[in-house]
Image 1 (spheres, helix red, strand yellow):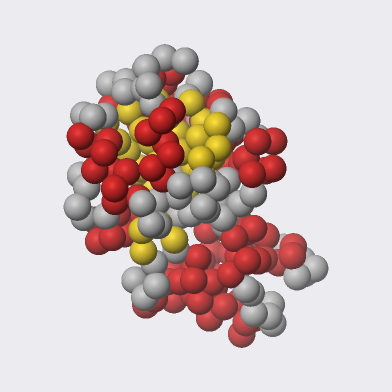
Image 2: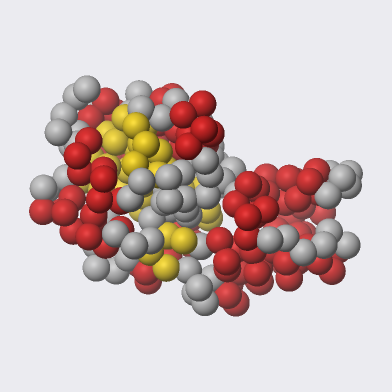
Amino acid sequence: MSPILAVIFDLDGTLLDTIVDITAASNRVYEPRGLGVFTDDEMKTLVGDGAEELIRRVFVLRGKPVPSDAVVTEILDDYRRAYQACWHEHSRPYDGVAELLAALAGRSLRTAVLSNKSDIYTTRMTDALLAAHRFDIVRGARPGVPLKPDPAPALALAADLGVPPAACAFVGDTNVDMATARGAGMFAVGALWGFRTAAELLAHGAHVLIEAPGDLLAHLG
């Protein structure tokens, strides 16, 4: 393995525990449409591929026809308004994240965030909830840019960091993150404190699994 010079993090389920607020905003939108109420555990299985895909998955899970793109856009607009009202109520960094980020800064490693959450919320939440750490780059979903697991945004981020992909560790909690890391030729680190299982992370190419944020340090050389 190449020496690690940069660490790229997923956001939801990796740096921040956001599921309670995501579930609350989702239920405000889905329940009036006859889709019922979702639990946090159900929502953990649905997130990861962006808000539009989440909406389509909700309909599939409830055994209903997937709506047209126009209806998806309408629901997405409602979700964004609901999330705007509640994103800050319960979301917080996972235990150990602040200490890990401080340790990475002490080692002069470059750090970045790459999320399928909208760019505005990725930036806003990083600024508000991880203010003590200055990431070199923070990027969420942006128009015209493919989402993870397409490796393109990860490769572009590595290029902007000035670090070869093989010298980047990519830390995430879902199959999407592991597939992104492997596709980009990065060191794939599965976060077991997040939204998905060890089996899923291993099945999609995790090089290593870590049980707590600080465990990453032992794998950076």
